[in-house]
Image (cartoon, rainbow over the protein chains, first blue to last red):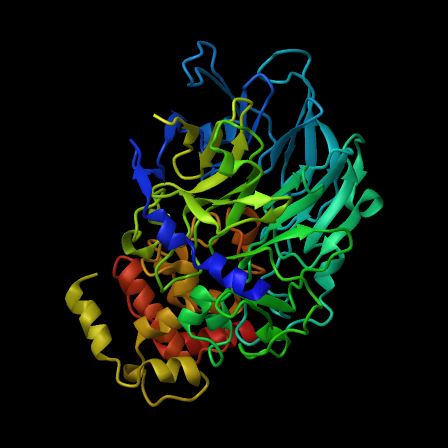
Amino acid sequence: MLRMLMISLTAASAVISTSLAEENDGLSLPRGFHATVVHEGIGFARQIAIRDNGDLYVATRKPPSAREEDARSGGIVALRDTNADGKPDVVEHFSEVRGTGVQFHDGMLYASTNVAVYRFRFEGGELVPNASPEVVVDGFVQERQHADKTFAFDDENHLYVNVGAPSNSCQQQDRAPESAGQQPCPLLERYGGIWQFDARKSGQTQLADGVRYVTGLRNVVALEWNDEADALYVVMHGRDQLDTLWPKLFSAEDNAITVAEEMHVARRGGDYGWPYTYFDVKRGVRMVGPEYGGNGKTPAERGKYPDPLVAFPAHWAPNDIVFYESSAFPASYRGGAFIAFHGSWNRAPLPQAGYKVVFVPMKDGKPSGDWQVFADRFASDPIKDNSPANAERRPVGLAVAADGSLYITDSVKGRIWRVTYSET
Amino acid sequence: MTRGRLASIRMLALAGFALVCGCTNTPVETVAKIDGEAAYRANCLVCHQADGRGVPFLQPPLVDGPWVLGDPQALAAFVLTGGFNSAERKDSPNENVMPAFTQLDDATLAAVLTYVRARFGKDAGAVTPEVVAQARQTIAR
């Protein structure tokens, strides 16, 4: 039954997206919703946080070029609307802290690099915090692959940090054709899970203070605490390259559509099956990975690892999740989850997909209906030359403001949208 | 890269995809039987993409890249050793590292690199199997 439900969930998107209405700048949204570009050009925008007073804070990545002006510009962008026209008119770049994660907790701004989580204190209503940030946690190993230390908080002052695995599938040689999987995977000691810390303490390290809260998660850039369910929710980047690594077992089409991006409740002590397994979207079954003896038709031991709450299409790249607790949108949105997908690269040579924001209706912490595309047309479809470098915009970060509007960031043009709803 | 030249590379494809994908270690009689574009599709495209522009922050573009435009033997040696120990790795903005493509035989790798240089490297010259063999010897030492 659960399996059938999941298959129906994954089949939902195409039908519902046809009812989206086009917006001024080419985005499409369900009828009644409206997206306003409130700002653009802030660089390689990642996740976004909103202060109680409405100020916006966006994490940005280091530009690929080493141009002096880029290096000067600062890693966090603060934006304030001083004349109440809905568009920020004061924009400040500050701090050397560059990365993807940014969140408010207990009145302080937390932001992360690839190796540490920092926090900035405010004296009062200033836009840019004056003092240097405190180190909340450091000592994460410097890595490149899946290195974003995105994070979330519960309401008991715990900090949860995603420590992505610097690997695709824990092969002896990462991403080398037919290289066997390491058994057990040694990376799981320091990576491939979520580590829990004390959100109030400074100067913690992963080894001395971190508790491995859950394991078997390849990389969960999107994680968020859900108050209603009193639990942590994650959306995982599933494994890549079934066909290029195992050409005798998988076709390019198999690779493009098989491996789910899995949404889970991350419960203390849980193991979600990476790198030994993956969840097959088509079959609705967890499978043994080819690095561990699977041949594409080998189901994993039943019940050993949880099935996902939702199995999203392969390679869409979930990069943020927020739960919608406001009443500004229609009642059906209350308690549900918005998820930003950055869009695929690993579907090539088949058509790229997933440059979208989706919505999962939820009740009591469980999906209560089919997921649906919420915001679309960030990139043209098909993308020119099927190349992610040609995507016009790619959604990354999400945040809900006090007035119930939804903010979305874009990593290509550094654009920020504010999405509102009106019945008329 | 002219269309005529691309077409002439394609016309060299006598043995084609199966030879490249299924049995890359099988010796081939001559370089003329290897389809460089098919070998690129099978080995390189998923990361560097069909247009050679890579994926921002994940895999670098090949188009007019320094390795692609540079010395053919150095290029072959780089692909045979992969990026894990390369000098560029430290300052690269890209997340992913190229594995070592030692499984490609000299003729196949020569065909791939010839295709890459013709298509993405301002018509940089062909790479011969002999140059790849020399590169393989230098990295073996």
